[in-house]
Image 1 (spheres, rainbow, N blue to C red):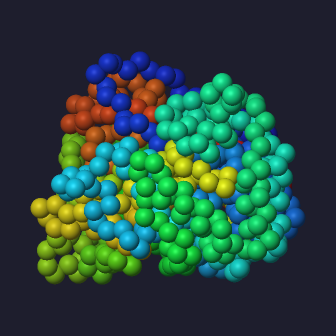
Image 2 (image 1 turned 60 degrees about the vertical axis):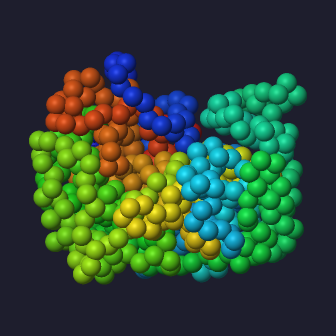
Length: 598
């Protein structure tokens, strides 16, 4: 893939930030974002010859870079990066949460599932009142009730055994060093602490994140986490099982069960029983490319592939933004209509397939080219359909009586990409779900609230809901770590992913269309305004679309919702500069991330 000369100019010129257009008072805002916006910083992208890592915090990127420089693999870099994110970006991910990883080893693509699991004593009424009505967002999230068995460490250990080169213990060195010596509180961490009404109510978290005046530590304060350093030293020396079978698991159980107002069901035995899984990736053709993503319990791989499969029926290239900055009315319309169709199938069918089968012939049915072509025919180029129906994939011989999911899905999440000198690469999305997870801290890290990704209702008039709570089940996710290959040569083209709850699917699809159809480089595609539909209103990123375009969309029948769409996209692509193959990395201007490599 060649980078346009216009985008180069040495180290590559900075992208202009789209102007903030006035919005009229009638525009409703999005529901509170999982992680609120804290600023926009222009970024130009980064180049490297041999290897590269991109993530949401420079300190975490540095840790991954150190591993690559030592001869480590992309897996080694990803692990070191994740461990530092546990420290410096605790609101988003960490060893108390879970992750999905798509990994290319140079020959084959793998999908690793580190999604959390529901406690053995949980049932479909976990997030319901005694009368069967669903709990509120706060009732569900805050406390022990929402915490599932963490999966990220066992998943990383599984991937490392197969694909790591550096010793497990070495990968922990940067995170231990920073935990002991301290790191400077970033503007984003400070802002999110300042705006969260719940994290300070946990005594352990309050003692760590807040000063004697009761306010969050200011930007630049050097924050040390000796409890996390101790935890990481134990895991580094004894392996992931130290976390799952020893005192850390018992500490998690005590914390979850001991919550004063909302105790949970998770036990040390549930944690010890957790198993990471290697699954078959969801790989599907798109024009001259092969796109590989995560299978269930993530819905991301299927939904992104469905969107691309429907886009194949349209001339998307002609819809590219003329200035590289602002998608036009027709692009937003077509993208949103296709999104409605993909999200309709997702909300009806997607769940943990170890418990609930997909309709018809499973993934092949949902990605069948003829099925997607028929779905695409529902798109009117001039008029919004408003709300799309779920489809009837091939092989479904009887009515598919599943109810509609109503999970919260407000992920506070992070994304890592890395490529190494051996030809391998990874795309990993990692999460504690909401900002600061369940608002519980133990042994130096935050506990997830991932169980609120289950549907709060367990059934409706159509039947049981596929994504209802069940013991040992993994909640449905929208996380969409993705790797792209050239279909003809099999060569690695790019890797991308993002946080953002159910909006992740639209964020990732935006970048794929931007790079593969519209000829943008990775940084330009990431910086494009976020837009799309989750089979409801057409959602537009605040301050990024002029009123004239909004009015044109309304005239086509779009119900517009404007607000924060705080993606955290990170990506890396293979480019050609004057005949020299290079890596080009991009990081979301909406967050604090960078890319780095040699």
